[in-house]
Image (cartoon, rainbow, N blue to C red; front, side, top):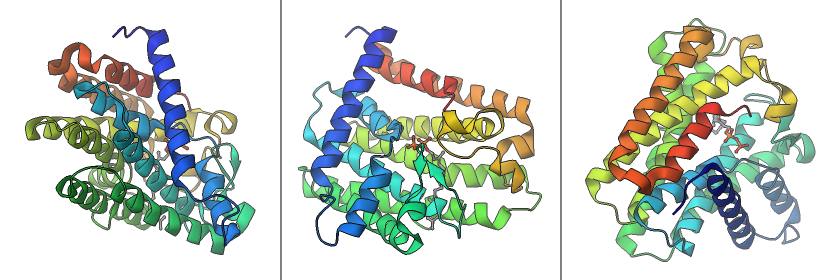
Length: 298
Ligand code: GRG
């Protein structure tokens, strides 16, 4: 397969479109009773996310197989559904109190906090339901569900979010900001890599290596997000920037400074790319994707 820039962009566009079709196929219709909840779920889900996590899931799978069947699209969609729940809850007045997300009004601003809370809950449940409907052997399905529960639960994403809340307004140590980022952001990105590798029947050594790759790019992704909160604009990010500093949040720039944060992100990206070298050209698209994450401005 040719992997020049044009092919990568075309591949990314096509796969994201397939993910969107899959999401639309599996999510309840917006007028299904009770329609308020389904409208709210669909609002944030289709508000214009970059679909970074589903595309990563597909690219890891594609290291081992080129056939993009329903199983990988459903797994990719499930992770996006779970990610969208975290965004809706994170934006609530009781947490980050954000008015904009994905360039649109946040779920609670449009539908009210009560419905937004339920929409997030429903998406979280729907994510597990989507994994349960993947047509694979029960043993594999149980593994996918168990990993999703482990990485998204109170020892994973929620632990990171909890520590984030506890750290607000305080001077935090480097290890605390590392803990927050590794849990609240990197674990979901690791889950993408695990799902892609498991569904491609990759040997355990490869699952481990790709999990490590996911952790590195996941941490880099959040560091870059922190940097963009300082250096980017509302229009580019589709949300209000500059809030981290205003609210004295535990971020990389706050703890390490901007220059050190950039160096740390670059090193993580380079280390992650090295982990892909054994896969040669089979990982070319994934390498391009990794470089794109490093250069992202939104
Ligand atoms: C808040 C009670 C409650 C539950 C949710 C896990 C969690 C708990 C919140 C997640 C915290 C969070 C939003 C972390 C930030 C991760 C991040 C950088 C999100 C933005 O991802 P992008 O840039 O967004 O991929 P799009 O919109 O493109 O999908």
